[in-house]
View 1 (spheres, rainbow, N blue to C red):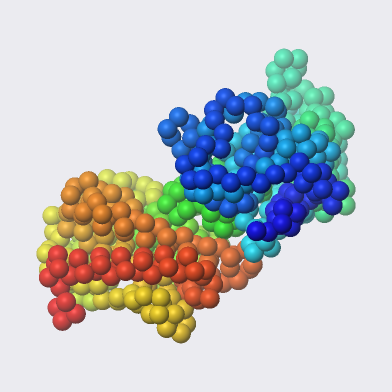
View 2: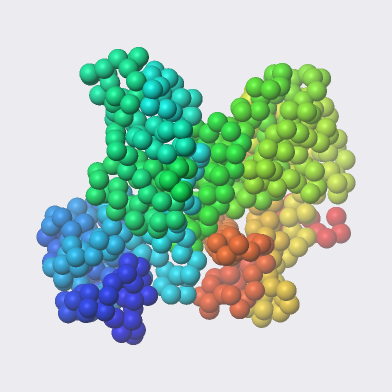
Length: 602
């Protein structure tokens, strides 16, 4: 067992503490073992300690409903210690669990003494959070998420400014046009004289007039900080002055404004995804969307590495990704005369499973012969600029083949179903995952009805064959024997996604494209056994998690991500679970072969 002091040193924010402060914590520390299913603490209890999990797993329950899991390196009991309140949840050991028990008075002593330590916790106090990241083996990847980064990195857009003689009406109009909650009042050299926020506007409503000059109601002198100062200084400055907007300057000139939400987004990635969604909705330019998308990938990587799982993560990220695309279309549509179309996504985005950005997979369906190509090219170019690369195979709306009227699309599918040659099977695998993103969804629904009426048993059999052609390696030896590592997408993720798509098409589940949702619906329809369905859900999420963490490490270290896992990167547990997951894939492929009477010689 790692000595308590060494264990604490590897965990932020205990790593912020001096030797003396650590000794104070340790002077009130004990070790407690909680057998599986034992109660750690009950509801409405006045805690006398803070719990730090050394090993095992604790579940937090609201009645009989579990609301959180506390695992190695995480704390529970913080709010009770800080505010001396009673617990509202019940804590139960879900596994044999060892905890370091920290006396709450010792904890509170250091909390009150060390502002960096206390600020770390206060950041999360008002929401669901996981206070600490993994231990030392992952700690270097989170450097950007700490208080030590330059405050300039948090700025999301150019500053919105006006001169002191501007009218309140003009200042508010500028704020509204730029979708911001503050405007910096500057002199001729862009040096801040004050700041006018939504709070100042309330004073205008009570005591002023919209034609008054903004300098009459601005908050002055302004609170500002240099762009090279660490985020921690910005946070403490805002706390000390009781403000929510902080001006950032470079050589005395304003370069941006950050809010407490901007800081929170750096410290809690799940919060940052919500913040990025709001920024995407409010964006007025492609440049702003580019910043949102860059920050999203980093936030997603951090969340994945902190343990958030694929299914939960994909639901959140799909909303942000869709918002970025929709806003891009809305911004560009003003420059083009285009009507009666629907923009669709295929691939992982079509399945609502895109996490770390991959290539674009999109198309357009229109109601007539109007040429949409120039508009589509502009959207594809903009998305590439934002950070979503163009598809090397040209499955994009800028390709006239995939940008056409509804009747041509019907002709495509009819031909693909009736002539299931390899190219046509590939097209079906791509476009049967199509999902409407923007525009007239009636066109999409009309095409789905046509697909339902024209799908052929022969095409379904060939799709089943395609899903079973590449079999995964067997056992740990088989996995290790792959010289270049195992391609999770090729051997695990695709066989499940492709096979489930076959079952969905066969059972006329066309409007559902997400693999998890398709599996759930197939189970509900008794088209897939509950045991097999649940096994597929577990293995699919595990392999997506493994792939996501692998790609996330690449993102936060500025490397290029891929789908190939070197077995040396896996610990023994992950390797064993991967072996079992691939066994489930193989079993599923055997089921498909039997269900559709297919073989390699079909």
